[in-house]
Length: 146
Length: 94
Image 1 (cartoon, helix red, strand yellow):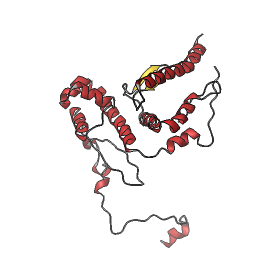
Image 2: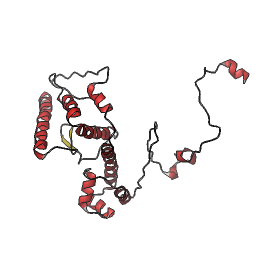
Image 3: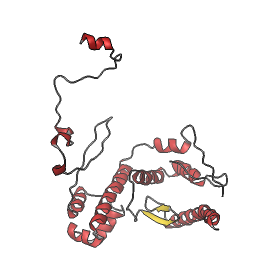
Image 4: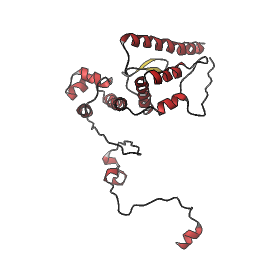
C-alpha cells in the first residue's frame, strides 16, 4: 500500500468547521468532564485504586462512579470534590478572564523557593505600572548618555 | 487535525462535514474528544476511548439518535474501520 501524505497550505473545510463551532455550554461541560475524568483515572492508576474502592471512599454506589467515569452524568460540584478528596487530592477551579489563557501547574511547597511559587492572584495593581513600548533599539550613544 | 483518505476517498472528512450540516451536536462531541486527547501525552480513559486494534480507538458516547440509527452507524463505522485496517494488515504480511 502506498501512502502519500499531503499537507494543505490553507485551512481545510474541516479545520474551519472545527474552528468556527459556536460556543455551547453543554458541549464545554462535556469537554471539562472528559478532562476531569482523565485526571481522576490517572490518580486512580498511580494509587492502584479500583472503582469499587473509589465509590466507598466517595460514599456513593459503584454505579455512580461508573456513570461519572463514562461521562454519562452531569457532574455536581460536590461530586468533583468528593472524587478528588477520595484520592487524597484537592479540587480546584478558576475562571479565566477575557483574552487570557490559563494553565495549571503542580508543585511541592517543600521543594519550591517562595520566589518561584505561582502566586499571581496576590499581585496587586501598582499606581505606577511598568509600560512596555515598542521603541527603537538602544544604541551605544544611549548607553553613554546614561 | 487531519483525516486519512484511502483510494481517492476521504470518508472521515466527508462524514465530519456532513455532521456539521446534519448533527452539529455530534460534531461537537467528536471535537471535544479529540481536543481532550490532544491535551494529554497518555490517555487513561478506556471507557470513552476503546482500543479496537491496530492503534485505532473508537470514541464511545455522545448524543445519538434512536437505537436503530445507532446500530446502523456502528456497523457503518466498523465497515469503514475494516476498509482502512485490512489493506494495512495485508501490506505488513511477509
